[in-house]
Structure formats: C-alpha cells, structure tokens
Image (cartoon, rainbow, N blue to C red; front, side):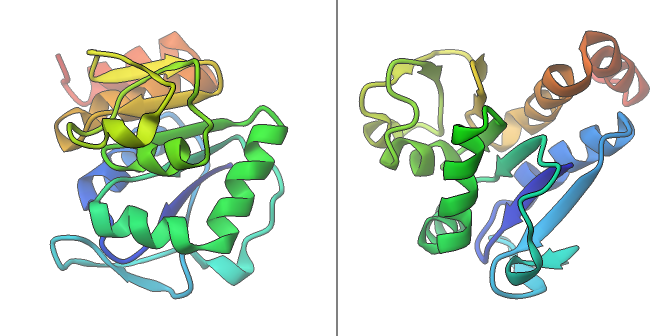
Length: 179
C-alpha cells in the first residue's frame, strides 16, 4: 500500500496526480489526513482523506508520498506521526517520495545527504549535503524527489516505475496520452 499524507495547505495536483497514476497501475493507495478527515488544499479545495492519522498503522507500506505546498509541508513536518512514519520507512528501506517543498522535510531530517535529489527552486538550502540535480524528477536509492506541480505526472509515473516496473509506467503513460 502507498500512503499519501495530507495536511492543510497541501498542493492538490501534487497529491492527486500521483494517486491517479498509481491507481491506474492497480497499486493500492490510501490518503491519510493529518489530524482530521477533511483537509483543505492550498487552493481552498477540501479533500476527504481515506483515513485520519490516528487510524494509520505501519503495515504493508510500499511507499510514502509527501506532496508539496509550503504550508502543507510545514504542517506535515509538525506531525509526530509523519515524522515517525518517515523514520520507520527509512529503517525498513521503503520508498519515500516527495515533491516541491516536500523534499525540504526530508532534508531537515538529514535523509538526503550524499544522494541526488531535487525540489522546488528556493528550497535547496534545506537539502544540505544533497547533490542537487537539475532534473525535474530524480530517483536515487529509496527516494524519489520532484520539483513541482508541472512535473507531478512524471513524478507519479516514476513511482509506478519503481513499484511495479517500466511496462506498467509506460502503459499508464500511453493510456493518459502523455508524451
């Protein structure tokens, strides 16, 4: 199961596009609302999460996704659950995916030191010790990072590729008519 953590201020397209790509590839996805069921996106759209953070159990986790949105990432970073899930994912070699401002949360934890990653321009300072890539989507080890909303489909397809393979990612790409 892939878990997408949502907190008020998250960037809606950076969460929903990867969810869409994964579900098209028949990968199970559950959204987790931090502390509440209805989360308000950065553009004011309410999104109902599948579960609330107090219902989350670290079981059958294949990947964790941290969407961007400056305020959303600040709120995710304040969550002790999100912090512990990331720690447990790292300890267990589970894929951690972050887009836009999301990689800054990982950078603050020192998790991206020595690996190649990217983020929304202006958040590089939080990625101390990271090899900042000029690519829009970067997979390195157990991490996938991406720059922002404009590459959220590629971000989602990279997660599909990592979890279920190139053929599945290309099938989804073809199905959605993505170049």
